[in-house]
Each structure stands twice: as structure tokens, then as C-alpha cells.
Image (cartoon, rainbow, N blue to C red; front, top):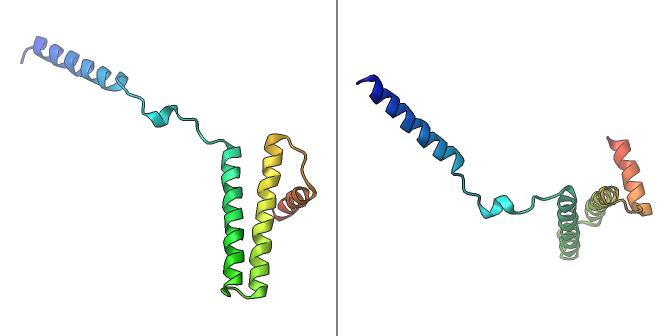
Length: 110
């Protein structure tokens, strides 16, 4: 192999690498907006509300005892209040008494 053959092979390899690197096609998901913190909190809030509804149904169906139901319900309600408090902080909204209480308990538990 001559030096010219090696130079041509290197040039072709470099050209192929440049085409590979810069010929990127964007997918539709690349242009979709990413989820914000508020979107994540809203999804969490909705999931907690769904869990509360399911818990109430399962309690009425006899799956949970009254003390277990109350304990789980209280935990979910406090989590919902924390999420709502975080949403208030992000949106600059005036927190409700429940969200203020959840925020103070969140600080105590941290």
C-alpha cells in the first residue's frame, strides 16, 4: 500500500465519520416539551387521589379494617397535602391551611 492509498482511506473514513455524526435526524419525541416539575406534581397528585378512591372502595368491600383504613388514608392525605404545598410554591399561589400544615410537617420530618 502506498502513502496515497492510506491518505485516501483516511479521508474516506473521516468523511464517513462526519456524515454519521452530523446527519442526525430528530425524532418527534425530541421536539416534544419535557415534563416540568409542576407536571410531575400534578401527576403525583392525581395518582394519590386515585389511590384514595381505591382505598375507600376496598375498605367498603371489607378488605381493610377500620384502623388500617384510617392509617393509610391519613398517610395518603398528608402526601396529597405535601404535593399541593409544593404546587403552591411553584405557582406562587397562596397556600391553604392544609398545605401550610403539610409544609411544616414536611420540614419537621426532614
